[in-house]
Amino acid sequence: MAFLWKFGRKPIYLSLGLLTLIGLATCEWLWRVDAGANFYLLPIRFWELLIGALAAVYLKNNRPQNGWTAQLLSALGIVLVLGSIFLLNNSLPFPSSYALFPTVGAALIILFAAPTNLAGQVLALKPLVFVGLISYSAYLWHQPLLVFARMQPYLEPNLWLMGAMAVSSLLLAWLSWRYVERPFRNKQQFTRPQIFMFAAVGSLLFLGLGYWFAQANNAA
Image (cartoon, rainbow, N blue to C red; front, side, top):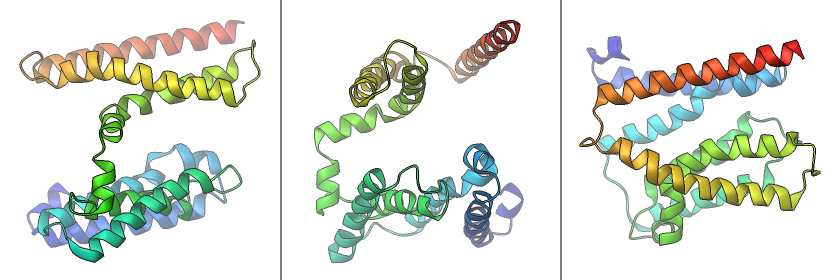
């Protein structure tokens, strides 16, 4: 990207689009060969992020649209995201071309939802805005909670247990958003070097814990 920048923006935009198509095609091929690598490896997943980059590029060079076009496309985005929640399941390969439903849906919401249309007004409701504020923390919390719920030997994983873990992830997300995210985003409390130092120390701590658990598991 840095190399292409001196040639103007158009080569960067074209390269983003090309990389998105290459990533999607690779993803669609690899799920048939190695589903685990297809799910976990970054080179197979970056095309999903590049859809967001393309949306950012579009908004940088175009004003958000209003009218019926934006109304319909933003509503379609919400339908695609909600449909992905209820229709995508373990019987379908993921990620694959099926990942276009949630990713393109999210891009349509970013591009076309506005205070002047229904999608923007719905997403501006306070409960949804609150979930948006804590969404990154919830994303970080939900997976470990669900994994430990499946691993614990005392209760058979069921809808009630998983529901409790989902609610717990939201509660923990609010706590970490309030007492971790917000303070660290405040430039008056922490400088950038301090944040990098905390990140480095935390990473080393968790690497050490992971190594210790792995060694303890091998010894057992």
